[in-house]
Length: 178
Ligand SMILES: Cc1cc2nc3c(=O)[nH]c(=O)nc-3n(C[C@H](O)[C@H](O)[C@H](O)COP(=O)(O)O)c2cc1C
Image 1: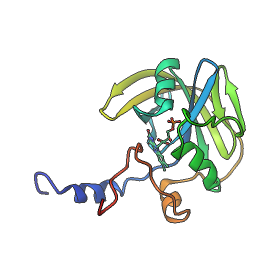
Image 2: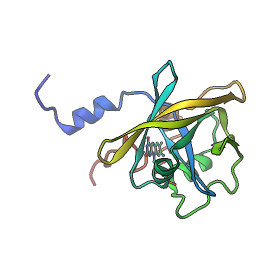
Image 3: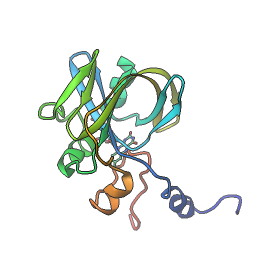
Image 4: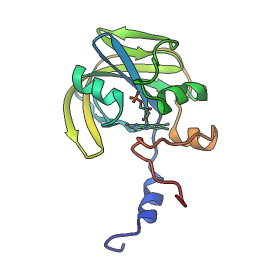
């Protein structure tokens, strides 16, 4: 391996990492919001903890930072693109994403149930400033499975659903020629 490969080589290599697609939700007082996140992964088993990486400009980042709670909805493979568009390309500062989407609460934590195979709710136990994003570590305090099904992966979203990434996503790279 060369000491510092070209950015395109780094990008090609990183594009082989695999992810799922999730909706992370949180609240600020009475206001509810959520966003699509691919960077969700379990980091410990006992007690169960997960990490999420949220862009600092996202409204959901501000809500998780304040409330110290978040939920993760594991999306089904047949999630309509219109719902991914709402949660992945629109900001809660411009639209009330929870107005027409089925949801419930675990304690005070909002949870999107529409298109979800399962959900879990977390209390933030640690966070790390990693530059453009913050890594929030949450301990899972509640979980529920709604139905059997195939979870939506990032690969299926890109290749079969022809979905795009978004500039605040952890995996975003400038399109070639821009
Ligand atoms: C496929 C896909 C994956 C994404 N992954 C992430 C991610 O891992 N972390 C992140 O902060 N934003 C991610 N985003 C971007 C947010 O979903 C997007 O910026 C959203 O509009 C933020 O909404 P908010 O401002 O209401 O919180 C992703 C978007 C898409 C479409």
